[in-house]
Amino acid sequence: MTSKAPRPDSPPISVSTPADILSYVPHLLGFQPRESLVFLTMCGKRVGATLRLDLPPQDADPLDYAVTVRDYLEADSAADGVLMVIYTDEKWPEPEAPPFAPLVHCLDLVLDTAGLELLDGWLVSSSHWRDYFCGEGSCCPWPGHPLADITASILNAEMVYQGSTYAESLEAAVGSADTRRNRQILLQTATYTEQWHGTWDRSSLGRDCLVLWDALITGPERTCVSEMPDVVAFLLAGLASAPVRDSVIVLAAAGAVAAQEAAVDAGVLPADPPEVELPEACEVLKNQALAAQQAEARSVRAGSAGDATGRPADLFREVFLATLGNPDWDRLDAAHTVFLGMAAVAEGQPRSALLSMLGWLEWARGRGSRAHHYLQEALAETPEYTLAELLLTLVGTGSLSPWARRRETAWTSDSRRAA
Image (cartoon, rainbow, N blue to C red; front, side, top):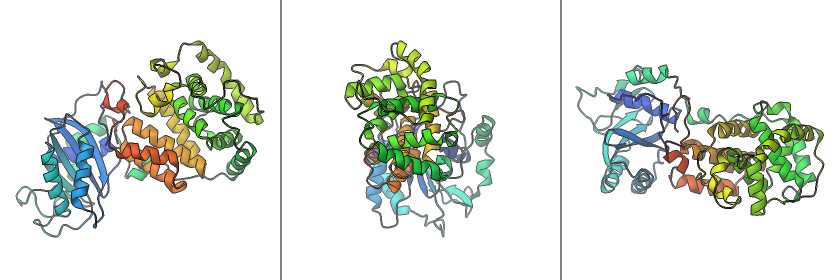
């Protein structure tokens, strides 16, 4: 389930034709769907949430699939209708025999019993598009309308004029498929992992990891991880510690000082740890970062952490469940850039940790398709990786993050994408 959260200052968009609707979908998702079912919930004439699912395999039970779709769509409690788009290159041999007919029949029945009328539907292939339910040759010529109608629609021109773009596929949109293995970083990561095994959350190493992560997220060097191989290797090794990894997620949302306070209060990092000497490059960056962090420590609770309630340890729950008020999306977007760059040079558990962190971030943004993709990548890298499995359960419920449900806290981008 994904959130459509337009920017408050964005002008309204007029949708008047099927080609307009079909041109709007990839702009909403941020990528061109393939072999997918996409649903747009409607409340009167207002578009609500967007759901994209892979089309089911041929041997899947269409009724079970339809019930799953209904469960997802019911998360939009204001919806009273649904639009459907099937993206597929399955053959449509004649007008009276559309592909996935048993599935669409089950969807129609199941959604109707839930009070969600299937208002209209279309099929988009790699060569044509047509109304799924229309058999009239006068308005729906066989085999369909050219795809150029979609790209030439008024709405598509309007979206492009506003600066909106989209990727040619989900994989291209996520952008994490390419890896740039760096032998020096991988060897140094293995060395640090072995050297400090079992001590990351029992010594100053955990605290110093948070200082360095914060320096990458807030500093100008955040997109140049290849220029700091020792720092990158140190931070990747630290991700083998679940307390450190989870504290980094809190740090991404709430800042280093708040994350350290929360970790100490929760008992996952020590309050007065024994000091461990850092590698030289890490020590230099740490010293450069401490002045700014000391200024943050003098504030009551900097940034979005000021909205946390109760004990500092509660910050873990508030961040992971996206209930912390007023998220700092500039900071979280910077963290996304860092995590993505680090994942490209990592392997094994550190890479799975970063992909899981990216999955959480995309879920928090309201982009379920991308969250699912990252988490599947994490499990492909390290089967049964616990954090990825837990987050997949959360994403699999179809529930939007609390941040994504409210216009005041929802993530937006300049291209108005929500995927």
